[in-house]
Length: 562
Image 1 (cartoon, rainbow, N blue to C red):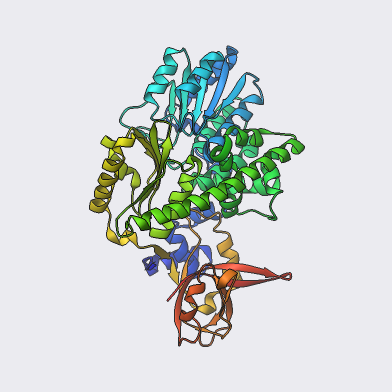
Image 2: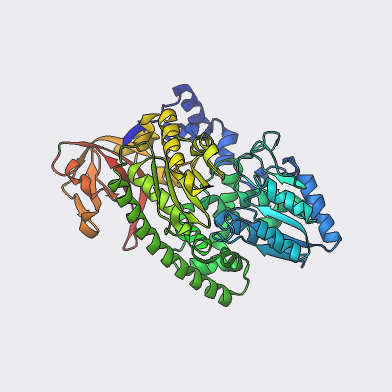
């Protein structure tokens, strides 16, 4: 691991903010590093308000989208709500369909089959719409690149509204309205909404026309927060407001389906991290192992007994997903080792029998192991499909653009993407991808980085500091959990390995003149020799609370030691 300490802001700026807020220098420094430089910005950060959300009609084509939906309702047309099979897509479909069905019955939902249809708007889905006399299709978390499919829908007499957040290509689909804040000519102030977030802006606009307020939409924010967490979009600006209030809904009054999922866990209060690791994988498991419609059914169910049944089925899907994930990851690691590819700039593996539903997770696991831009391929019909994952600081979408002559289609973000190609193009693509990455990546990015917010003295670690840091939540990209670095630490003699095979490190540390404080380092059991019996050591960590026998104490959540 390489430790990178963020530059400390100018002391004058720290002093000004510290005085304005009545906080110490450390808190002022952390805020400035997050782009918060005055009292009003700090107030908005610590006290998010729904009134801080932008006017949805600032988004390009929003008026067109609202007018077309109102027309469909007035004409008693059938509306199809269409979305991707992952968390962002299924929550988007649940949000839009449940909102429309509050006042209008002629609404159906459609999630494409991951294996038979693949990602995005499918010709099969459009045929379904035509066969069921659909006049309007609202596509969520997909559609921005569906040029041919939307042209096909138009020939069939079906209008399409696109609600997407992925990068547009050079050509836009010929839809009635294209809602995507990443369009260059879209003046919407916040560009980082997830697909469900774009869908929420549409229902915000529709409800405004109905005379409703933003408070009337609170019940939908558990879905939006779940999508924000799962899609790893920045938790800044508008996303921070949506995530903050969405978590309140999840913890106080979640929809029936989410409540059924939470009831299967032992958690009393969920953080955004819990949503990422507990709620999102279960919703995702439906589309990975069976069909995404199972997730929509759960998220729109209002009868708790039925929701519990749906949640139990999804739990079985998730158990199966975990087993496959572990098995395929091991096979992929062996493939990399046998092909002696550990020293390459990329990791690209393929097995025609790997389950398409878990290759994205496997790509993430391989990236954690070798820390390289990674693609995992499997057979999908008569083509190969892959999930791509990147390392911090490297845009894998741009790298795929550099190989586009080998690809049938691709789409995604800076750090995650999907693609398909013809099997005969696999070796050519693999070599070209390695070449593009090797020529464009800074080699330093191939070593995992821990970004340190600030150096800290042990006597600065107090309950008061912890109380303030908890108010920085919800954490995520753009507002990560603060990471600190302390130097010259000593072991009290307590250091030991815990867990199976001593996998984790438990210790108690101090610096001359300071009180000892406990620390836990998950997967750092192999670093015990850097703590035990040495004169001193440095550590990077976040601050955490440890509850044991009813007593809550501060502890260091160790990230690395040297």
